[in-house]
Amino acid sequence: MRSTRSTIAALSACAVLAGCSSAPVDSARPVVRITEAAKPSVSRPLNQVLPTGGELTTTLGVGPGFTGQLVVGGADMLLQGVGESEATPIECVSAGYRLQKLVYAASPVREVASQSWAGGDFNGPPLSGFFGAVKFATADDAHGFFAASADKWKRCNGQTMVLHQPEHGADGVSRITDVVVDSTVVSAVVLHDDGSTIQRALGVASDCVVDVEIADVDRDGGARGAVAVANLMLQKIKT
Image 1: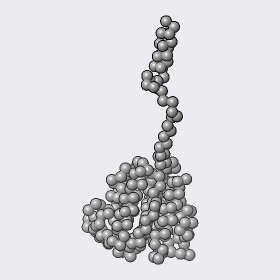
Image 2 (image 1 turned 180 degrees about the vertical axis):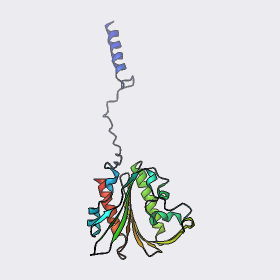
Image 3 (image 1 turned 135 degrees about the vertical axis):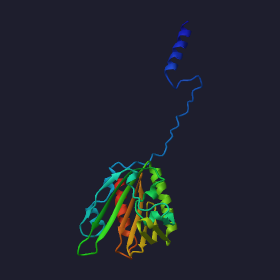
């Protein structure tokens, strides 16, 4: 009887412990499995990723300027300046025009922040810029978007893009040049037929993409100003 009680007690204890079974006990050491940690999401508010006036003055080496109205919201805050049937080749819109809804529409955008800026003084030519930060659902989504965009920019290097908007009385031709692709930033210089030259840069960190446009006055410097601002914004995301 005592043996029976011992058996019942052991079985009762086994029922309480989830890991108990009638299978033989493996005396080997437990296997520790380490999985890759998920890429961290940007923790600071998205508007704080945008460059300040002081940061732009220092980074671009120009006189003090002023910033435009801050715009923060969802995917509906993306710009709708170019329609799907209005530009040829359509894949070059990303390099030619900033923060377009057409470019980001197929991606899971969660938040958008953007702001314009103008600066300069009598010691040098004035500069203007537009800066955007886009938060995606995941870091993989952001990096996937960047990789696809960088490939498009590279293929558009040297190409001429035609914009046809008869309902707005606007037609234009832009040439995309000087495309440089790095691991986290892609840049280009865009020559518009109205005589303006634009520096463009797109960068990625964590679950965010930064979208930069600067009116170019340094015709021989490539897109180094836009790249410098993009890296400044990416550093904010990382810290």
